[in-house]
Length: 188
Image 1 (cartoon, rainbow, N blue to C red):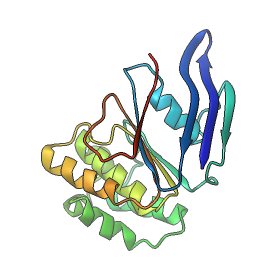
Image 2 (image 1 turned 90 degrees about the horizontal axis):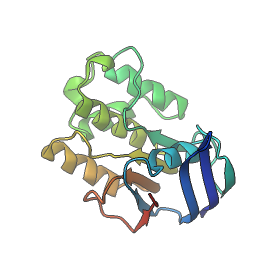
Image 3 (image 1 turned 135 degrees about the horizontal axis):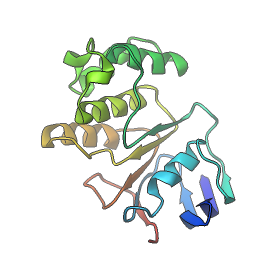
Image 4 (image 1 turned 45 degrees about the vertical axis):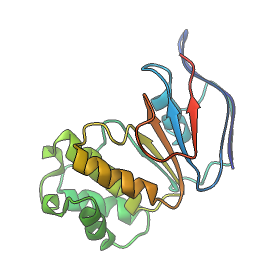
Protein backbone atom coordinates (compact mmCIF):
# COMPACT_ATOMS: atom_id res chain seq x y z
CA UNK A 1 0.00 0.00 0.00
CA UNK A 2 1.28 3.46 -0.94
CA UNK A 3 0.99 5.84 2.00
CA UNK A 4 1.00 9.63 1.88
CA UNK A 5 1.13 11.59 5.13
CA UNK A 6 1.21 15.34 5.77
CA UNK A 7 2.27 16.12 2.20
CA UNK A 8 2.99 19.76 1.36
CA UNK A 9 4.42 21.28 -1.77
CA UNK A 10 5.25 24.97 -1.66
CA UNK A 11 6.58 27.30 -4.31
CA UNK A 12 7.95 30.17 -2.30
CA UNK A 13 5.17 31.39 -0.05
CA UNK A 14 2.46 29.65 -2.10
CA UNK A 15 1.24 26.23 -0.95
CA UNK A 16 0.48 24.34 -4.16
CA UNK A 17 -0.57 21.08 -2.48
CA UNK A 18 -1.80 20.17 0.97
CA UNK A 19 -2.78 16.54 1.56
CA UNK A 20 -2.91 15.22 5.10
CA UNK A 21 -3.49 11.56 4.32
CA UNK A 22 -4.00 9.24 1.37
CA UNK A 23 -3.55 5.50 1.01
CA UNK A 24 -3.53 3.69 -2.33
CA UNK A 25 -4.08 -0.04 -2.15
CA UNK A 26 -2.64 -2.36 -4.76
CA UNK A 27 -4.83 -2.52 -7.90
CA UNK A 28 -7.11 0.22 -6.61
CA UNK A 29 -8.60 2.89 -8.88
CA UNK A 30 -8.78 6.32 -7.23
CA UNK A 31 -9.87 9.72 -8.52
CA UNK A 32 -8.37 12.86 -6.99
CA UNK A 33 -10.71 15.78 -7.54
CA UNK A 34 -10.51 19.44 -6.74
CA UNK A 35 -10.81 22.85 -8.32
CA UNK A 36 -8.11 24.38 -10.49
CA UNK A 37 -5.06 25.16 -8.40
CA UNK A 38 -5.85 22.64 -5.65
CA UNK A 39 -2.72 20.59 -6.39
CA UNK A 40 -4.00 17.62 -8.40
CA UNK A 41 -1.28 17.79 -11.07
CA UNK A 42 1.32 18.60 -8.42
CA UNK A 43 0.36 15.45 -6.51
CA UNK A 44 0.84 13.33 -9.63
CA UNK A 45 4.24 14.90 -10.31
CA UNK A 46 5.34 14.21 -6.72
CA UNK A 47 4.20 10.57 -6.88
CA UNK A 48 5.99 10.17 -10.22
CA UNK A 49 9.22 11.40 -8.65
CA UNK A 50 9.38 14.51 -10.83
CA UNK A 51 8.90 17.02 -8.01
CA UNK A 52 10.17 16.73 -4.45
CA UNK A 53 7.70 17.49 -1.69
CA UNK A 54 8.43 20.41 0.63
CA UNK A 55 7.45 18.22 3.56
CA UNK A 56 5.63 15.01 4.36
CA UNK A 57 6.16 11.31 3.88
CA UNK A 58 5.44 9.05 0.92
CA UNK A 59 6.14 5.38 1.47
CA UNK A 60 5.94 2.19 -0.56
CA UNK A 61 6.03 3.77 -4.01
CA UNK A 62 6.91 1.27 -6.75
CA UNK A 63 10.53 1.33 -7.86
CA UNK A 64 11.54 3.78 -10.62
CA UNK A 65 10.36 2.62 -14.02
CA UNK A 66 7.22 1.03 -12.57
CA UNK A 67 5.42 4.38 -12.21
CA UNK A 68 4.14 6.14 -15.32
CA UNK A 69 2.64 9.63 -15.47
CA UNK A 70 0.49 10.81 -18.36
CA UNK A 71 0.59 14.60 -18.19
CA UNK A 72 -2.30 16.89 -19.03
CA UNK A 73 -0.33 17.86 -22.12
CA UNK A 74 1.43 14.60 -23.05
CA UNK A 75 5.02 14.62 -24.22
CA UNK A 76 6.14 13.16 -27.53
CA UNK A 77 9.56 13.10 -29.14
CA UNK A 78 10.40 13.92 -32.77
CA UNK A 79 9.64 10.90 -34.91
CA UNK A 80 6.58 8.86 -35.72
CA UNK A 81 3.88 7.71 -33.36
CA UNK A 82 5.20 4.14 -33.72
CA UNK A 83 8.74 5.27 -32.83
CA UNK A 84 7.43 7.03 -29.72
CA UNK A 85 5.55 3.90 -28.66
CA UNK A 86 8.53 1.61 -29.30
CA UNK A 87 10.90 3.92 -27.42
CA UNK A 88 8.74 3.71 -24.27
CA UNK A 89 8.43 -0.05 -24.62
CA UNK A 90 12.18 -0.44 -25.04
CA UNK A 91 12.80 1.55 -21.84
CA UNK A 92 10.36 -0.71 -20.01
CA UNK A 93 11.96 -3.88 -21.39
CA UNK A 94 8.84 -4.82 -23.33
CA UNK A 95 8.74 -6.11 -26.94
CA UNK A 96 8.28 -3.57 -29.73
CA UNK A 97 5.37 -5.61 -31.14
CA UNK A 98 3.27 -4.47 -28.18
CA UNK A 99 3.12 -1.02 -29.84
CA UNK A 100 0.96 -2.32 -32.68
CA UNK A 101 -1.44 -3.99 -30.24
CA UNK A 102 -1.94 -0.81 -28.22
CA UNK A 103 -2.30 1.44 -31.26
CA UNK A 104 -5.09 -0.89 -32.41
CA UNK A 105 -6.70 -0.91 -28.97
CA UNK A 106 -6.68 2.91 -28.99
CA UNK A 107 -8.17 2.89 -32.52
CA UNK A 108 -5.08 4.78 -33.68
CA UNK A 109 -3.24 2.33 -35.94
CA UNK A 110 -3.85 4.72 -38.86
CA UNK A 111 -1.65 7.26 -37.06
CA UNK A 112 1.37 4.93 -36.62
CA UNK A 113 3.57 6.53 -39.28
CA UNK A 114 2.53 10.13 -38.67
CA UNK A 115 5.01 12.47 -37.02
CA UNK A 116 3.95 12.52 -33.37
CA UNK A 117 4.34 16.29 -33.21
CA UNK A 118 1.51 16.72 -35.76
CA UNK A 119 -1.17 14.97 -33.70
CA UNK A 120 -4.23 16.80 -32.45
CA UNK A 121 -4.69 17.29 -28.70
CA UNK A 122 -7.14 14.39 -28.50
CA UNK A 123 -4.91 12.09 -30.57
CA UNK A 124 -1.92 12.91 -28.34
CA UNK A 125 -3.91 12.19 -25.19
CA UNK A 126 -5.27 8.90 -26.54
CA UNK A 127 -1.86 7.70 -27.71
CA UNK A 128 -0.10 8.81 -24.54
CA UNK A 129 -2.53 6.75 -22.48
CA UNK A 130 -2.10 3.78 -24.84
CA UNK A 131 1.68 4.15 -24.57
CA UNK A 132 1.46 4.24 -20.76
CA UNK A 133 -0.75 1.16 -20.64
CA UNK A 134 1.55 -0.65 -23.09
CA UNK A 135 4.50 -0.47 -20.70
CA UNK A 136 2.40 -2.19 -17.99
CA UNK A 137 3.32 0.02 -15.01
CA UNK A 138 2.53 -0.93 -11.45
CA UNK A 139 1.24 2.60 -10.73
CA UNK A 140 -0.38 4.66 -13.49
CA UNK A 141 -0.96 8.36 -12.86
CA UNK A 142 -3.19 10.13 -15.38
CA UNK A 143 -4.05 13.83 -15.43
CA UNK A 144 -7.56 14.37 -16.87
CA UNK A 145 -7.62 11.29 -19.14
CA UNK A 146 -10.90 12.07 -20.87
CA UNK A 147 -10.28 15.77 -21.61
CA UNK A 148 -10.22 16.71 -25.31
CA UNK A 149 -11.63 13.36 -26.43
CA UNK A 150 -14.77 12.90 -28.46
CA UNK A 151 -17.48 10.55 -27.14
CA UNK A 152 -16.29 7.55 -29.20
CA UNK A 153 -12.68 7.80 -28.02
CA UNK A 154 -13.72 8.66 -24.44
CA UNK A 155 -15.49 5.29 -24.30
CA UNK A 156 -12.41 3.49 -25.65
CA UNK A 157 -10.07 5.10 -23.12
CA UNK A 158 -12.59 4.63 -20.30
CA UNK A 159 -12.74 0.88 -21.08
CA UNK A 160 -8.95 0.51 -21.36
CA UNK A 161 -8.40 2.27 -18.04
CA UNK A 162 -11.11 0.12 -16.43
CA UNK A 163 -9.20 -2.98 -17.57
CA UNK A 164 -5.84 -1.76 -16.21
CA UNK A 165 -4.39 -4.38 -13.86
CA UNK A 166 -2.29 -2.07 -11.67
CA UNK A 167 -3.01 0.82 -9.33
CA UNK A 168 -4.58 3.79 -11.11
CA UNK A 169 -4.69 7.35 -9.80
CA UNK A 170 -6.58 9.85 -11.94
CA UNK A 171 -6.67 13.61 -11.37
CA UNK A 172 -9.75 15.47 -12.61
CA UNK A 173 -11.69 18.61 -11.70
CA UNK A 174 -14.81 16.44 -11.19
CA UNK A 175 -15.52 12.72 -11.18
CA UNK A 176 -15.41 11.99 -14.91
CA UNK A 177 -17.38 8.84 -15.60
CA UNK A 178 -14.68 6.25 -14.94
CA UNK A 179 -15.52 3.58 -12.37
CA UNK A 180 -13.52 4.45 -9.23
CA UNK A 181 -13.06 2.48 -6.05
CA UNK A 182 -12.73 5.75 -4.17
CA UNK A 183 -12.64 9.53 -4.61
CA UNK A 184 -10.18 11.78 -2.75
CA UNK A 185 -11.09 15.47 -2.60
CA UNK A 186 -8.33 18.06 -2.30
CA UNK A 187 -9.06 21.25 -0.37
CA UNK A 188 -9.12 24.57 -2.20
